[in-house]
Amino acid sequence: MKIDYEQLSELYDKTCRTKNVQYSYGTAGFRTLAKNLDTVMFTTGILAILRSLKLQGQYVGVMITASHNPYQDNGVKIVEPDGSMLLATWEPYAMQLANTASFASNFEEFRAELTRLIEHEKIGLDTSIVPHIVVGRDSRESSPYLLRCLTSTMVSVFHAQVLDLGCVTTPQLHYITDLSNKREREGGSAEVATEQDYYSFFIGAFNELFSTYEIEKRLSVPRLFIDAANGIGGPQLKKLLTSKDWVVPPDQIEVINDKSDVPELLNFECGADYVKTNQRLPKGLSPSSHDSLYCSFDGDADRVVFYYVDSESQFHLLDGDKISTLFAKFLSKQLELAHLENSLRIGVVQTAYANGSSTNYIENTLRCPVSCTKTGVKHLHHEAATQYDIGIYFEANGHGTIIFSEKFHQVIKSELSRARGDMLALKTLDCFSKLINQTVGDALSDMLAVLATLAIMKMAPMDWDKEYTDLPNKLVKCIVPDRSIFQTIDQERKLQNPVGLQAKIDLVIAKYPMGRSFVRASGTEDAVRIYAECQDSSQLDQFCNEIVELVKASA
Ligand SMILES: CC(=O)N[C@H]1[C@@H](OP(=O)(O)O)O[C@H](CO)[C@@H](O)[C@@H]1O
Ligand SMILES: [Mg+2]
Image 1 (tube, rainbow, N blue to C red):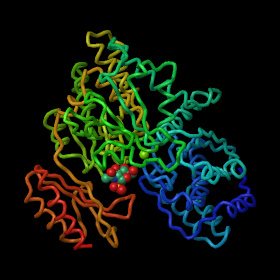
Image 2: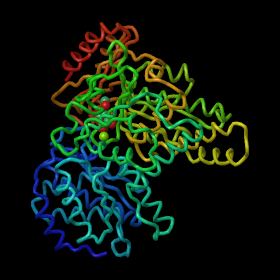
Image 3: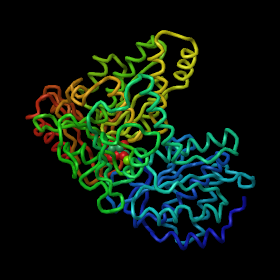
Image 4: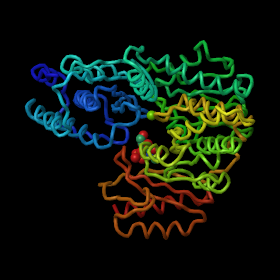
């Protein structure tokens, strides 16, 4: 391939209007005010092309979204050919390219940086490899313009093949990127992967699970309300619910906050982040009956939290920890029924933000191993995928999935091929491994998996909730002059710096029965986060305040 530098230079001058902004590729890719993103979109498009070239032209995904952030924001992230997050060693390249374009005084400086990167990664341009890209965007008003900035060079300069999915959820983009490459490997002539493949696949697994139990395709609750955060989850959910294969009666499910066409409403007083943070119902919902189940997606539908309202009108949150524990209970039971508890290893992966009661319940009641990793789904995903055959991971905020190992699939396949009396549990495990998105946390697929689990176990929301009781807890933000001084060890549970602060925190913790608290710098916001939990809710504010004061004093 010959890069047409003249063309590239022209597009560079035309597109990269934002200058002197420092961009950083964090846990969620690049994310900031939409009006400042043209430059970084331009360079991210080029980086995705290089990534595809490096990987012999496989499809690389790019998603334009700012998830649960306000409607004025936007962002972009790159997805590997197998649907996982961009390889960590490429994150600095994404930043170098973006910041060079942002601070360079002319195109030649940018060109030099691009050349350096191509040489450093030994990307052969003198081959016939055609780069392949899948792009998707959420419902934000700024997304179509940013998409043009992102893709401007792809065809004209790099002769790439671009599959534009239009408006999709983040997990749909991950799933379709992975599927596109599988199709290519099966012999390029196969049809290109589409959104329809996504719906067919997950509805298929859901229906198969219900058929296996020969139960009527009804939910275990009379009614389910889904809050779509006025984001892309709304229209995508409706496509699923109106699909000809979807058989749950329409009167059981109602979608609310589905105005994805009104930009300012996105994530406004609704959605998973709002409900989890404020522990209250989103806008547009008033409790109808205490046996209804509710759930909220975030703006790009990769997170989900559930909740219900009891007969005393009390709100109860069923967050990521509760979802993990529900799946751990259900799947451990299936392993036991299939007599596979000694051959396949099941485990739960959490972060320090998981409620202490959930950890205690998983370890001591379910007798299931628990791992703790740093915050950020890539850490949880990696642990789940490498340590367990059934690796369940959820952040407390509702982002997560279950990863099934290669060994799991082999064992189930071989056991299923031998006729056995305990076929039901084997089939359940097999169907379940398809029902849950293997590439990334997915509100839609997680929701289906929760609904199926509740239906099979004949559980009402309160049955699910009463397995364990959360310790009273609080998460606060503290703005400090320089958050980088707060350095942690032990999966972010302890501070190493500022020196001496951890010892002071430990003295405070010791005063509160079942107290636990930790302090870390946020990776996505310019703030320090302080988490505290203890037995007695009347002491919680005081406990948390004492830690906040220590942090302020040392900052
Ligand atoms: C306490 C908390 O919820 N932290 C969030 C938040 O990370 P911070 O590094 O804490 O800002 O954003 C991440 C990306 O969306 C998400 O993975 C994580 O769970
Ligand atoms: Mg999200």
